[in-house]
Length: 321
Image (cartoon, rainbow, N blue to C red; front, side, top):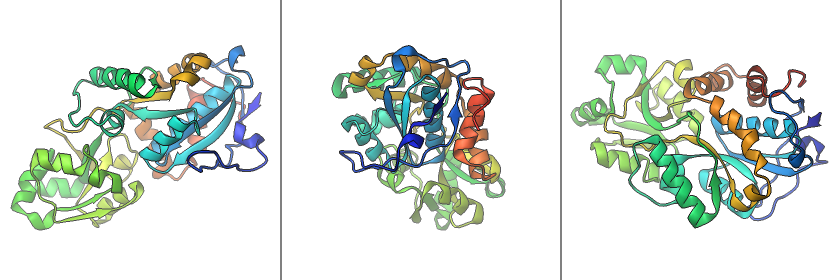
């Protein structure tokens, strides 16, 4: 049995490069399930990172549990603020493994402006280019595709007959006073965010308010804004009775999730792929919406939700208290 790595640390320590610190441990003893100990990973130190929103923290914990079951000494660096910091932490070696989205890789990291509509085509393109240019290895992608969309309350959508982003554009062109948007700071300036989608559809924005991810959903639900940037796998869609407006012009890129790590680290420990791939293949949008709802709507602890899912799927043993 192995305890998640950060539990073994006497205290947080500062990592190099980004000046990041390890988080408090997830206090579970991890026993093998279908993920069995891998001799080549016994005692190997692996620092797992994630970005700072619920889905990323969930999959970060899943990775930690899987790797701990395989025998690695896991260090927890989930909840890194922002895509750029997460990416930098991976490139500089502050973290060894994280989960990333094909659309983010293609647009944000590789600098492309036009997404590839086919999800496999998008993944293959980002996988090959990121490896060639940056030495970053993308493992085979998951069905989980967490792309962007605009959300409104179900009542507002019914009142104004809104089902697609084109419907929203028509409505706001006629009623520009209603064009109040809540978005994240990054989304407000990213090419695959508000500037690009506004150019594609041509809708006005009378007021744009920037909030953290969670505050956007609450802002839409309580009327602070009429339209909000949302993620299509977020549990608060169901929990707050929101409607996702269809991206009928297919502006937003595909955002299939994949485990990523530096190529040098992958070559040293290729066994990581066999450990992580079953977890990636078990994830999908429906699973994540339910997991996210448990955290963001029902108020359950993120680590416990991740652990329960890993046990339910049989990846780790049930004796993890």
